[in-house]
Length: 82
Image 1: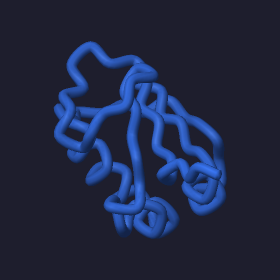
Image 2: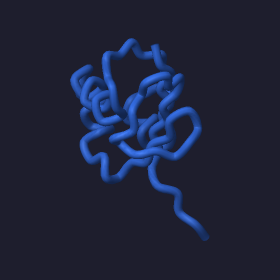
Image 3: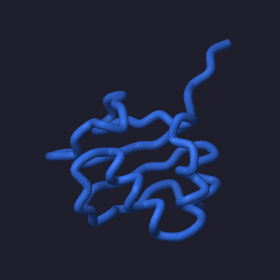
């Protein structure tokens, strides 16, 4: 079981801020593929992963990051400065 958090427009498209997910995924990319298969709103949220950033256990990561031992994955759009 892993906690998955969604921020900004990702949360808006999926319709919830977080959920506990039972997964067989070994990497973040595998988790995204599992989520995309759930229902159309997940497919829409993850249609363009180049527009997303990810953190694993509150550390910036990439989509090839292993999930072994991870407790939390967060998806969010890139931060903009200003």
